[in-house]
Length: 442
Image 1: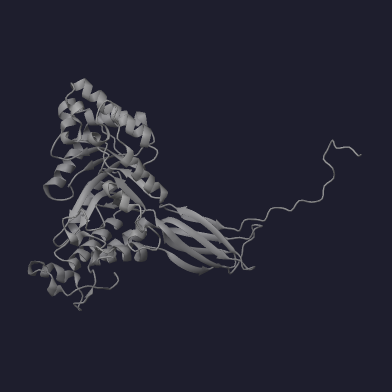
Image 2: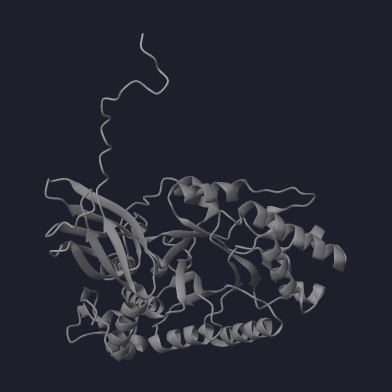
């Protein structure tokens, strides 16, 4: 059962939405509660797939267990990726953004995606005229804040995203140019980004396959793996999460698999408005999960008929995606109204305060799905808890009043994760020694 949250009355929603909204609203019109069997199922799935068993062992500097020690378990970041699309053209302002542990909404994000300024046509104007300053600045910005970076698209199926000098070449020239572009991106950025959307399929154009043949995408992945064997290479689809575009995406993925394309990730753009129903969202994820690779939601936009309806939609979408075992992360198209066509999709209002949807996002990701606990160790110095996977700081108060502190990353997965909290031993004091060997008496 989810927590209560104040929202506006159902009477504020358009009449066409009232019947659906009633399914989400409790007996009190002012207290919204997401209800239904799927909520309990989602909570069980979240516990199974997003949480791990943790054992903390408190020992002193000599390695002896410390009984009855007060212990704090403080989560610092999620293992699940909560990212946002970095608008490179807005970086001068973004450099001063309040991305900290204290700022609501901002504090949850642990990754960014750079997909503006990184397309082939923007990066390479021809004759090795690489224009990477904005991309370098964006990645530097993210690295300075400890954020993971995802490259939004290396090669696109859309001919408008390829430079004219490459498209005007013959078939062999285009293939060579594409290989050189991929090799350059992977050589310079393959180790600075966590994953790349190697092939961006718009579903509306297929210049790569049209010019280079049906095996061109397979060859693209083979060449990329040769250039950077450890890179995480994904395939991405634009505006592809629902309706006929979702079915076309699934067909295209099956075609790629049949032709031997080996991709590590599937990234799909997702936009929600109206009144979101949970079942179709889960069904779409189930279909995508059939390819047995992690799913990333790119450019997520959750709007609604009103700010309150957008908040309901946000909770529905986030709960469904966080509960699905194949979803590795979500990247928001933006969190501010600037650059959005619908203000209800913003997480922050024009003065930087959370919108109703932003409040839902912050409450779920930094409260409901967040671990901050106090315990007392048992007689053997043990504390056991079930915590959300992620980055942690563990602290124990020792009998002498000092703190033992350990920073650790607790990865998702089965089994019990054991972390030892131990103070750093004081270095041994030097003893009075005789003259070094070889030194004679005067």
